Image (tube, rainbow, N blue to C red):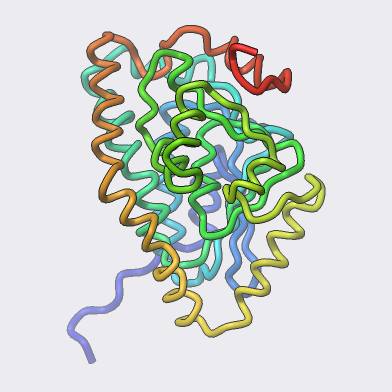
Amino acid sequence: MSLVKFIEEPQFEDYKEVFKDNYILERREDGVILVRAHTNGGPIKLSVENHKSVQQLFKTVGADNKNEIMIFTGSGDEFMMEPDPEGFKIEAEDLNYWAYEYAFKDGRVNLYSLLNDLEIPTIGVLNGPGFHTELCLMCDLTICSENAIIYDLHYDIGSVPGDGINVCFQELLGTKRAAYALLTGEAINAEQALEWGMVNEVVPQDKLIERAYELADQIMTQPRTTRRMTTQVIRRPWKRRMTDDFDAGLAMQMFSQVAADSSHHGERHISDVIAYVRQGKKNNFD
């Protein structure tokens, strides 16, 4: 008998309550956990608090050995199209602190946690148009709704696209297509995303979660060790890409913001960028 006992793992009912303001959590008896990101029950509105919660969630889900597959999605008809109107006030009040704490540290850890802290297979469900879609696109499998639009707004609003979407686009699209998407703000619709290999399936919006559970059921047919070790094999390209490119890109984005003396979401024209995507335009200059 060991001289010490196991440290207790996170308990689902406890962290379900802790995360409820940012994520609605459901878990089946077989360990398939559904995570619905939300802001006040609707689409995600990006904020410092919301941003920090991502890595906290992934670390907690990964630390609970009763979880076997994670399905990650948004809420409503859009994934993430707008920032919280007051969501970056705390950053502007102390830019020197939050430029590291929020923008650099959390920006790094969020994606590293998705790839490293979750030993279980992950299924990203992109429920509609949005930015920061790397949270779904970098899951092991990704499905999207027919109305999904994938785009990056960083360059259009005066920021360097270096906090994860750059790595995601370059890995999935290749060098030239990624460069075009990042420099022009190209809006990539669901059919194009499927053709280019950004997503695995396009599914009617009202069938997304049902289809995600079907995929989870297929994955669950194999033993636990096989599932988990296969996950580590298929993530190797992502881990190589992150090791080679991620930190440098994020540092360049942070430098550009500090040099411009601006907070992360104090950039101009954000409403214009969102408007062109909602209007179905391919680029911001259409």
